[in-house]
Amino acid sequence: MSPFSTSAVRRASLETSAPEPLDIDQYHRVADIYIDNLVAKLEEMQEEREDVDCEYSNTLLPSTFSNVSPLDQPVLLIFFFTQSGVLTLAFPPIGTYVLNKQPPNKQIWLSSPKSGPKRYDYVLVPVSPSSTPEASEGMSGGDGAAQSGVGVEGQEMKGEWVYIRDGSTLTGLLEEELGVRMNNV
Image (tube, rainbow, N blue to C red; front, side):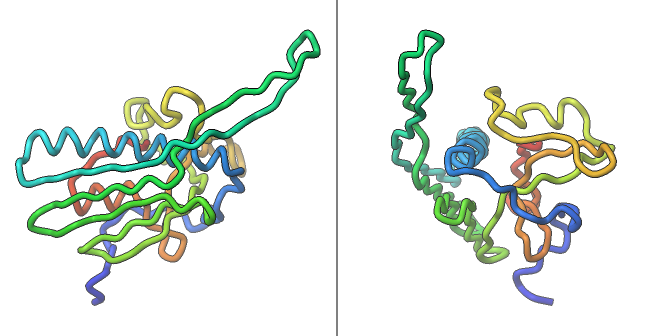
């Protein structure tokens, strides 16, 4: 068996393993929501364990959107998104994890000392029947940025960061290797 096995990691349905066609602003919103929630969970863990060290650095860049007001006056809206956030987590005795955004590919990359490097795409996957309202809470991060909807035959769908090669999810890997519960964010 490979040292990079992910046998117990939660897997997305292979039927829905095509990345969502996100524009760059949508990508930044869903990636930032996920990473911000992960950082919050890791900071909680850091408070409980002296040996855990979490460091997140990012650069905020403006993204513009033009629109026309009801008075036919041009309006320029400016949003800020994280360009290329890098999260470094020292997690003894396992080692150091590095997670970062890859805007050109619209992916989140993770380097794990336990399971190796992976590139996660944002994919809409079927919501499992065992999902509870509490488990799906926070999917949109409160601003509707994460996508959800209805798939084939009326199946409810939700957004998930998925490693396309084997269908494993970033959320599943974080839970298995670090004990971090993301509550389907």
